Image (cartoon, rainbow, N blue to C red; front, side):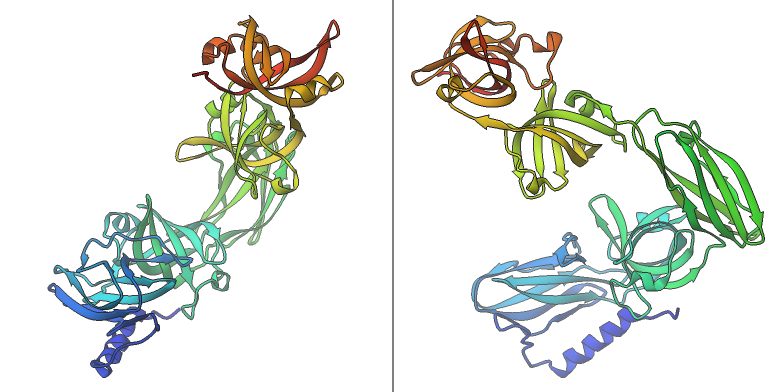
Amino acid sequence: MKFKKIFPLFIGILALMTSCTEEATVTLLDEIQVSSSYVSIPVDGGSDAITLTAKDSWTAKKVFIMKNDSVVKDSISWLTLSVTTGAAGETELVFSASSTIDGRYAEVLIKSGDKTQRINIIQGLSKIATATCAEVIAGPDSKTYQVTGVCTSIANTEYGNWYLTDNTGSLYIYGTLDAKGATKNFKSLNLEVGDEVTLQGPKTTYGTTIELVNVTVLKINKSLVKVDSVRNAVLPLEGGEFTTYLTCKGQGVSVEIPEDAKSWLAISSIQSAGTKSVVKFKAAANTGGDRTTKLTFKTTDGSKSYSTETVLNQKGAIIKASIAEFNAAPVSDTQYRLSGIITSIPDATSGKLYMSDFSGETYVYKITDFAKKGLKVGDIITIVGKRAAYNGTPQVAGAVLESSIPVTTATIADVLTKADDTTKYFMITGEITSIANAIYGNLYLKAGDSEIYVYGCYPGYGATGDFRKNLLATKGIKVGDKLTVIGTKSSYNAVPQLANGIYFSHESAQ
């Protein structure tokens, strides 16, 4: 691919447009008019100004880069705006910057109502620096770099989001332009894991991730080894054979199995004929949760190494766990089975909710097809999902609903009329009038003129043995408090009662 000096050309065009319309007002939007949509600040430092005319109040925001039309970089410390807000009418907006040894650019978004006017800010000419990944990581944002490395992983094949790695480190590439400079056409480049790539693009930092954004690919050196296909990409719980079919144009194939997979995965054979190789692996039976590993295949031309990768997955046992055990487990692909009560539903459309059992509470990030399940707060559910985390907080990912028990909200008077049934659950609320057994939570609840005996109020769903004890003392629940409890209708000596109560919430008496 030919090297394109896109940015200097862009500057030249803008400069020409500006010189030809120096006295005219650039009117891109009726709501916001600016005297120029291009600002040039001297490389030695200084200022430039435009006149802004708005029909309503407005705000100005410095940005460096946009992702899917959302601002992700708003810390252009080198650029100063004289004002960032204004009322309807005419305002002079001054842009200032100190001197720089290298060219840099930014963008300012001026918003009024639902309209946005973009102002391009350029100081000097941007110089493209040839650098290693480590030098990019240590360098300043906004600078354009040229880097050569190997594609080690591809995250998105539409925008072209992937990882570039050399012997000094790794960079995330967010957005890759095609041969004509267009976006969302990554597949046209035919870039694969293992290929050596030379590219250029501006650096930004998104959170803690250092990125090159909307890069231009200058050269692709195809890897001498690649995976053509695999057989048994997902192995069963019992284990078995996983086969990879390779094309290798280098000097033989070597295989790397990660250290944490060597205890259960081994190479059983390697067969080569011409440029084709077949590598077979033997996986042991899996007694834990789902597991996955990345296999690396390498070759050399005598002076340079090439590599490619594939992923092996193996189904595992589903681990039944309390919520406390789940929260304490490490983030992994292991599948857990959790049962508990829905305590709140922040997002009923996608199934984001909180669930609790006797041991604690956890956040469930989406249940598949939740909107079709008809679930509500108070229902008892059993789900299967992976231990994940967000900002260090445990959560369930990829949750699938296995079963549910509906819980009907009812008055005490209603429950007293129901037939005994250990399969139907009711949620009732009442005032505690007396406590017969504080250890197990045997107590009387009253609402209006109706009263019912609650035989056991336990800390949460799934409590057994000693875990059923001392809820009242732990939570400071006493006579006069309002208690909400879930249980089944039963009788003892023909006297109605709510059996095996599950604590849901309470309000302390004033």
